[in-house]
Image (cartoon, rainbow, N blue to C red; front, side, top):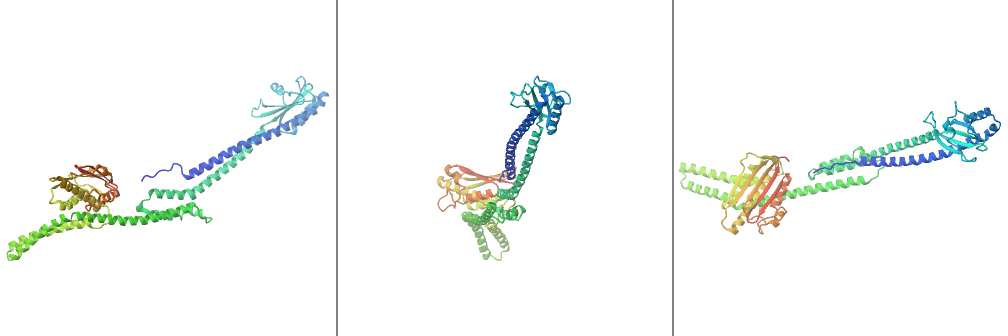
Length: 502
């Protein structure tokens, strides 16, 4: 039986499911936390920038009114010292001229007019990049002093602090996701170790389990319950579905084993009964084969009693009687060899030899009938690994059925020369045997039922209906096939195909 392969192991499914769950929820949380933290930091950042800018605007009024650039520069330096994240600050008069600044050189021209407050009360906020160090992103705050006509203060605060805090938080969160992912994979490995492996063992045993190796399957399953992966599940002493599955599966195998032994005994009895039934059909022919030699022995003994002193006659009749006894012994041995009850022992057998034995037994029945046997076996020895007694039983059964069919046709049509042809072919990996007869044939509407138990086309008391059924099972147990073709009134053909290796 072909064993289906598993595309995804249970561990793979556990690992994939847990990984996807951890990654998806981790990324969603990272996005939510990132946005939440960024919004919170932005709000706090803008509040801080607003208060710094407002403090600079309020304090710079007196210096602007006093026309004190030195004091204004000192104020800017003090503001810069308050917070290291302040990147620059400068003050413009009402005409846009720089009154004081924190730059080493002049205030960049493109920076002077990019952020002008909309009115005297509002704070202008824009994001810019440092023209010299583009990696720095700056939040620029602008506010009028008393009025925009008197002057405007500008403060640039680095946004990198926000990004660094957000990135640090996201990094910590991703590290937690990675930790959860590792823990999840370890959990998947644990589940696989304690659940998937026992299930995989049951699956593998089910795939290779055959009715003839139930004992080996039971031993494998019992051994698995002593393995660490199974005992690990017993840490808390609780029974779960896996334990119940093991117990039920074991009970099923035990019942299957008992059923197999009962069925095997029944099959052996059935085979033996069918053998005896086959022998019963040969009784008349066998009696004839034995009676003729016995009659010869009787005549010889009467002659010897009349002339016991005739040495030449004694020698002649002694030789004839010895030959008759050997003939009787041969017939009896053939019947005993066929009828003995044997085990299904497989060995190398010669198929043509088995065919000839079956034909010889069948001839005992039809010596007085006009039935010709034709065995085509001119291709030499054809050997295969099989049970010789079982195959001989199949061959004899088909030949007896052919004889019965021919005799039935003779009863209906009168004079008829029966013909039974057996052809043996060596087809590379298989041996094919064809049995053909010119008997009554089998009606087409019952041809598909002839291998069913107890089905027969013979009259009442002339057949058990088990011959072809038993033959079918014997051929199937050898890994072969048996098929039939037939036409009513013309004859039947049976094809047996047997593999050379079992």
